[in-house]
Image 1 (cartoon, one colour):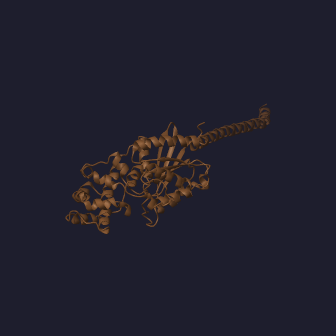
Image 2 (tube, one colour; image 1 turned 180 degrees about the vertical axis):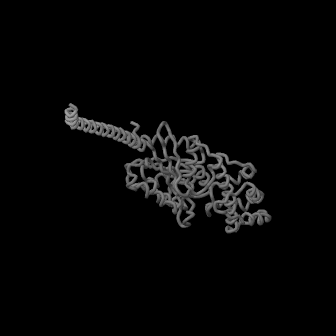
Image 3 (cartoon, rainbow, N blue to C red; image 1 turned 90 degrees about the horizontal axis):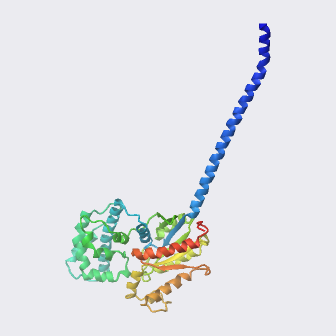
Amino acid sequence: MSGVVRSLSRCLLPAEATREAGGSKDRIRERDAVQEREARRKSREIDAMLARERRAVRRLVKILLLGAGESGKSTFLKQMRIINGKEFDKKALLDFRDTIFENIIKGMRVLVDARDKLGIPWQNSENEKHGMFVMSFEGRGGVAVEPIEFQLYGLALDALWRDSGIQDAYARRSEFQLSESVKYFLDNLDRIGQPNYIPSRQDILFARKATKGIVEHDFVIKKIPFKMVDVGGQRSQRQKWFQCFDGITSILFMVSSSEYDQVLMEDRRTNRLVESMNIFETIVNNKLFLNVSIILFLNKTDLLVEKLRQSDITKHFPEYRGDPRRLEDVQAFLVQSFSRKRRNRGKPLFHHFTTAIDTENIRFVFHAVKDTILQENLKDIMLQ
């Protein structure tokens, strides 16, 4: 009997093996199905993430600030920070303080040197030694001018700025290269020379440091992300412009409208305003910007008003036919001069007259610019 049972057991083994094999295949199929569902889920998540990123990129308003050196691009970018409530931290304030100290000393060195080269006599001969002391200053490439060191120059700077020889040289500043912020800082020497001096917002706007490389500022207006990009405007920096051309929504082209009687720092034979017109012609006719709104900012209106009283624009632009002392005539001439550089006259050229150091002026102008940019790019930034 036991032999029969053993025989039956041996007969049942293949069937059991078959069931076991089938169960194993079921488990493999189930495992594969789970993995496939997980893979599909991850794929959907990745697709959704990519879609969100594409929408975000399309919604991003990327504004490129272009223009020649010292046209006011960096000042405009500082205004954007101030207007959008992004305060400067302590380190930034101290960096601006160092820049301001250097702006003042280097600016006075330029004036002392110009007075000598222009043959203008000192009002007070005692200021000869003050001039020599200031001329002995050398920028030290990245080493900050500390307040205690700046105070050593305070007496000399004040005496020199009061001297009519320096004032006469300043009146002829269009004949040499001088930062436009120098007068503002020298007029505020008493405050800036205090041991605990921290720059005010207005001081920061006047602080001048050449932009090297690419500076960006991000902000959000009505849930729309903006990215504003500032690139150095000196000739040596312009090759970097091409790095920023991808995904541009709009270009703000900055022009220093008061520089009609000045030449480039890099090239003493080239008029600054002519240089701006030539750069603008290259940008506005570039096929890359066929669908990009270009907005012309004729900046430094305050300085233009002041300069028209003493410098005749017809000496530098003989084709000018308006009243050389009338602001509106000069501004109309500037708009026409830039507008003529466009090959495609059918595309509108938006323009604004600005004073970059005036926060309320920039706030008002940028509100209009923002509306123009959003309206011009409504579909691309998916606002419809």
